[in-house]
Image 1: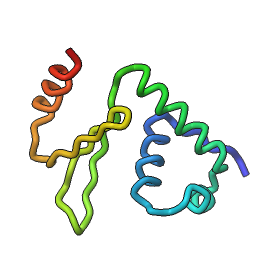
Image 2: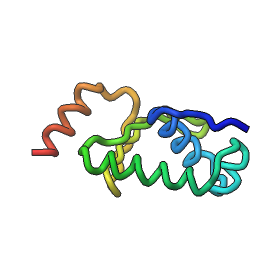
Image 3: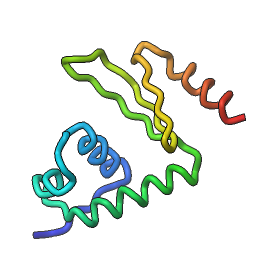
Image 4: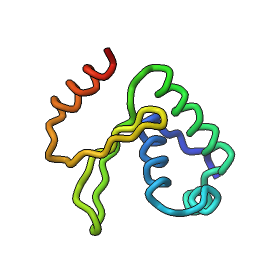
Length: 99
């Protein structure tokens, strides 16, 4: 079995998928052929990079039970906004809060 190379964006997409899956880390990783320990290591590394650069992870989600929403997470804080909110408004909000 060859090792797959994944970009940061691909890892982040996997982490988002994992968070939405409701599966245990082990079950999620086994279903995708990923070493669970390596998965956790990469997750920690990317979280630390995000926290140290000051950039927030933004994810969109849509499920039958809810309307489409945008999540902005910075550390332990989470902001959930409807997708109808302007990206420019979100950028201005983040800029204002970072002052």
